[in-house]
Length: 496
Image (cartoon, rainbow, N blue to C red; front, side):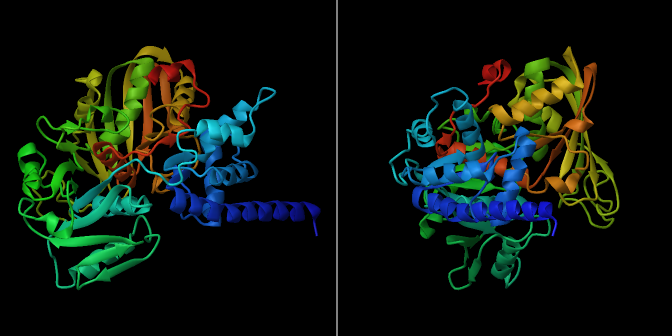
């Protein structure tokens, strides 16, 4: 047998063994210490051996250097020995920062480095200063079910956001079974990772130990949530039926409700929040907040990055957007122009308020953007084309290098991603947890004229942004490590 083949196979099996050994360590940190580990934002909780290997491979696309299991395995084992309190830890970024500390002679040992870096939670075994906040999902459609999956994934020891109930209109005698089935199976995002049980006697769905009360109601103002032990709840309205303060205030009339979040652009004076941009505008006194639209969440971080560095004079945003549930599958009456034509067969020109909505989160772009949209026959993942006129001249390489660095080392790293693969297409972005991904190879730049292509999962990426806003409203963000960037540039340091 070829010795090269033997060596290659042996190397692969060694990496598999390291990944297998990491699984119980990741699990113990999660269950016993309330520590959520990730690699560049990709959670390692409940991942298989192959899932961990793929997450390490993904890191090379993010930082252009291999993330070695030979480095992360001992790092995780050392973390498990520090008896940590609740925290969110990015293993890739922490490892990168440790390697930088070793560039000079006499650098700290791994344990010394981790004790110093995580000093605030070392020795606090599972302690979680966060209070728990009851969450009610009003509506259980595409966004509602994906938000539910994310909340169940983050349930941990019961601190932070606690999914307690969903509210729907009863659609059939077997409604509860159908709701559970839709949570279990998804044509776009795949099967639910875990177990789901439906109890028709108590009208509950239990998913991975999270017991969810199903409440049937047509009136958001008359529900007594306290009957179910729910109090001071955050109601997430994902029906889109009410978008102004008057309509959404109906939720506040129900017993047990403290705050309301709308998963759509709000009207009037309601705060439209794009996490990473203006989430600090949320105050303790805000009772109704909106999470803007999927497109606004996708383009605003990119626009802020470009405006901060190069200045935006004006621009046009064109979104090529997957069809949505408000369109017709076959030609039929629709109150909106063109939307009555078959979504499965046609590209449909329609309007978008995303360009104007950007200014609600980013006032410096007020009046500078126009926008339009084309709905296309795909079920998920959209792309926004930003055609911008800049104040300062630049080049394609400078823009791409800057955006790539922003995706790695800025306060926008949870929202902004970057890729320069020659073969990516829309389905490659299904399940992305970033609100938008810049396609570097598609960038066009001619001095002050810039065209950017931004991919976004208009369902899952947006749902991740919704959960971030929920955490901000509830004040339940866990401490995050590393707290500071490993390799800040002068430009990025200025943004922090």
